[in-house]
Image 1 (cartoon, one colour):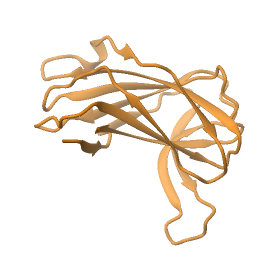
Image 2 (cartoon, one colour; image 1 turned 180 degrees about the horizontal axis):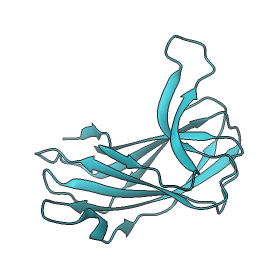
Image 3 (cartoon, rainbow, N blue to C red; image 1 turned 180 degrees about the vertical axis):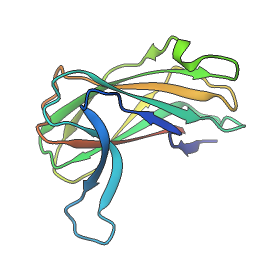
Amino acid sequence: MAGGPVSPSSVYLGTTGNLFPNFYAGGGGNASAHDEGIGVVASLAADSTAELRFPMPPSIPTGTLKLMIRGMGAVSTQVAKFQVSDNSCGTGVSPSGLTLTAEAASSVTFASVDQYIDTKVTLTTVPNPNDDLVVALKFQTTGWTASTVTTWQVWALWE
């Protein structure tokens, strides 16, 4: 049976200033127009990595573990690129000492302003119950053409 979503319990955005906590304000004008997420600077000039931890449930759902990455911004016909690396960490293990598995890089094209753009990345990692999923989400400059700030949300799910 599919499961999730599981939100991160920890998000570290580094010290470069390229990533930051952000609220994206949608242009629709309703009473719930804001989304919170990871902000990425306009015209990203250096690869920048968000470090995330996702607590796994005590019973792992069936299906394929994926990371859902949702982008949004006042961006049209521009591209953002990222790569996910991951592993699973149980009790008595150092999450910073793990070797992370790099998944295939993803390219996201924003077709129009103010719309959710969803990308699902299939993960190689198969976590055990109650582990933490350790994730490095690297936003990559090569091919990045988004010229305004973008905002990103991330969660784990099984399909």
